[in-house]
Length: 400
Ligand code: TRP
Ligand code: SF4
Image 1 (cartoon, rainbow, N blue to C red):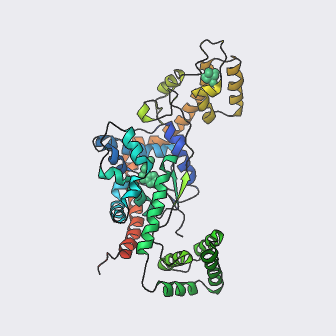
Image 2: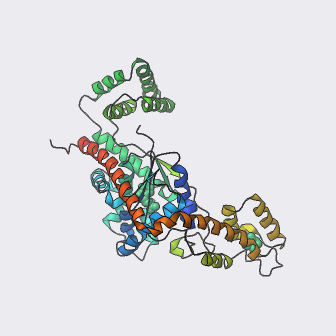
Image 3: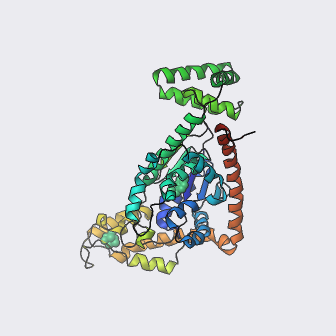
């Protein structure tokens, strides 16, 4: 309905590590070739859990953006910005909060989970309950079509879709909607108008989803209609309302299998990470002391890669040839664990050399990063402002 667009955010809560790179960032880098992308530092989101230690947020913001750039996120392709510098997110959050039933937020699985898991903090706050709705505002304000997120965040995208639907239902009403929609159909030209009407009938009378899809494609291709008419025609295809906020889809990011240096999932809270731009000597030491299959007590004891976290690293870093060498050598005790770890160490160091090289100009001159963000914030604010104008108008808040 609106042009395809990707939006995603990341909380600034410390240096990014290889789990972030192989989980989320690599995916962002790939997506920026396929879609216009908006990536932002979710500093308000970090506040919902770290309101007692805001210095972490401040320290992490610039380092995190440098890590994005180090990963290959390209500021000439993607818009990079900081959430709190686009205050329109807060306005939309507030307006959406008026129409979002409390139960929808209480039922979000991360709400109870995190309260139970993060017992060292008091999360019985209004902001914490509302944070999935803030996320909905982050997404809806750019009318994103796709949102790359991990599995745990999928319920938030579901909530976003429900909120958009409810908003459109409540505020997409307009006097004389049907006449305006019919007038807009005429503007499509006779051939397109005929197909549009057929698709609309097929969807509304037989629930034909494919017809709905075709109708949408047809509107995507129609260049000669105004934004208002486009919203009407998308809405008229399915019912009797304008569509002001677009329902996004989750793009599920495969959960990274990256183990930390103790064999558990790599995570800052376990203190088992390798940072994206960690010092090479430290990387080498961490991998060399990583636990392996406990069955290999002596060099002559055979092992089983499936029981060894180092094997998980080979799955990310090694090609077929090296993997065969590991499997055979491990099971026959033909290779030692240090020998087995060496190709992983080499591969991580090669990857990190690239990160460091990309990061260097920004480390040398922090103004470059600040300029990228300032420019991204301007672009984001412009788009957010356009959406907000329509939202205010739809809600009857213009008063003029
Ligand atoms: N809630 C997300 C997380 O904790 C971060 C986030 C905030 C986000 N707003 C977003 C992700 C919008 C995608 C889209 O990881
Ligand atoms: Fe793990 Fe490699 Fe040692 Fe086997 S040889 S236990 S895969 S480190």
